[in-house]
Image 1 (cartoon, rainbow, N blue to C red):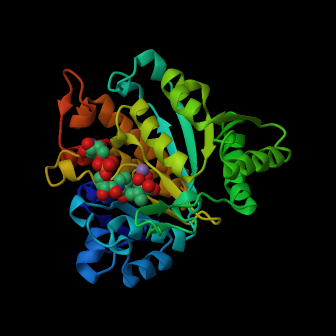
Image 2 (spheres, rainbow, N blue to C red):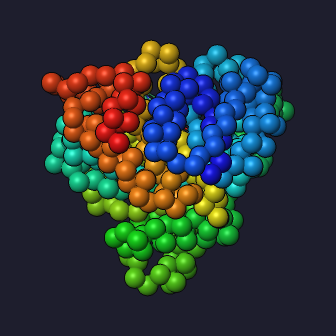
Length: 351
Ligand code: NAD
Ligand code: IPM
Ligand code: MN
């Protein structure tokens, strides 16, 4: 099992080191090879996705990624910025299906900013389309109009096959869960998502057992905070999924708890926390590594078909939380406050 390890920027190296430690503790037959991406790629090779990094990712069965980005790169031309490296690797590897499970560990019911009764028992799977939408649509850019003022352009677009394949992922996952899919769109205003809704309805004919509902994204944002447990599987486009998954992370206590899997059609995948490089806390050993460790568990589940070891990692995270270990973002009164590295150690000990 070959894994490309791409720590990236900011807290990336700190959190990835914890996930690597946990994977090593399982004594599996893994080969892990590190390479730079994002700002680190730019520093090493003048490219946020160096050729050698992309080649390594292509030659591996799975990619474990930390995060990319730092304010200091914000002035670079767009194609040189760290975020572009991440978008390119997703596109190059055809990772169209992004699974972001928002699961509340009972121990963290008090860590959410919402009342415990609103979030307790939450188990929501957000499925975000990852290689289309306004993120990649052409035309795009900033140009100068005839009257001299500037105009910014991005294009929201989805074709039928792109919608269908992410819809299938959602329905297939729903069949293994509670057979409920909520498709989130803005079909009242945007034609792209009007087509999205039509295709979802057509596809649902192939899944008679699954109950399909639709919700406008503005209402969905509100309902996630009002009554999040009404949702089971939520499927949506790239930009709505980006925003809603950050929102949903707070239901689990912290953005530091939300893992993700980005899969192609053959379950080859890239695994990364849903959060960013958190430059504000980088280098301080205070980041929460659990989203990254839980992403490694998703890697064993989805790419390596190793459910037993995936569950082992998840249970070890649960145990560390039950023992009171908390990083600052999920700290509650009387907890055992630890840093990033010590949280990784606590998970390894629990394994
Ligand atoms: P962010 O997710 O990095 O941080 C938002 C807030 O959450 C910050 O206060 C941060 O300290 C906190 N946070 C994030 N992860 C945490 C963790 N594991 N433990 C504790 N606290 C955590 O988002 P941002 O500040 O908007 O963006 C920072 C940089 O990250 C930008 O360059 C952005 O483009 C990039 N980014 C990258 C990814 C990715 O690589 N997948 C995702 C989002 C943002
Ligand atoms: C994420 C991030 C990325 C996205 C950025 C950094 C390109 O926010 O993984 O959620 O918008 O997809
Ligand atoms: Mn995001």
